[in-house]
Length: 315
Image (cartoon, rainbow, N blue to C red; front, side):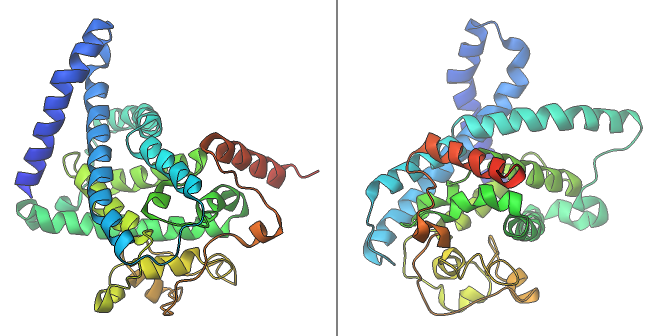
């Protein structure tokens, strides 16, 4: 675990000193050096996520596809989403907003004598076993992610944004990042707040993100793969495709099934698991009646704002 952290930090340091530092120096922005270094870590981590997921998922999607892709343009749009959300302006904007909000709060708490809490405070032995603490952080954040996901389906205003994610009829691993910018930002604030509350160390946070986003991207892949016995622990492409299934995945008393992000245990605990052996067609029911979610990046964003406006201020 230490080796991975050191390797990642070395790569971030090289990118920063080679590309970022000379640029901000030339622009006279050295006062933003600390923030620029943190933003570089987000950029490098996001790029590594894209490369790792593509190397694994692209061959598997060719080997055992769950469906025949009917519209490659939609997949290319999802690729734009992926690069924008993982290595583009959105994570940088989210990071800047989070930094602006939480840094003053942390500084004020320190002045009052309150040091940030962490799991190691409650269980000191974890300090000597970083791999175990990393797994615990992933489990806790995944639990928070499960309830966030249920809220995205339960609250109608949030669904107006999140439904964009479900509107992809040709789902692939690129679909993981098919989100409205407001949905993405609310999720970023949610997870950052939980991470701060449980004291995820800054050096471990990129690894937590890498592990969770890797499984999340794999679960969206166009693959006939149910993980065998592992399906009772990890969210598989089949398990999550049922969640995206038209009608199945976002209707009913609980507004859907299979809300787990990484682990299936939360769905089993709270009676939202559906382990049916099926690969249903994906999408949202109202698409059958002409509802347009957009086929290009900026159009999808605009239509999301339109749906939100209609929800709060119907004609």
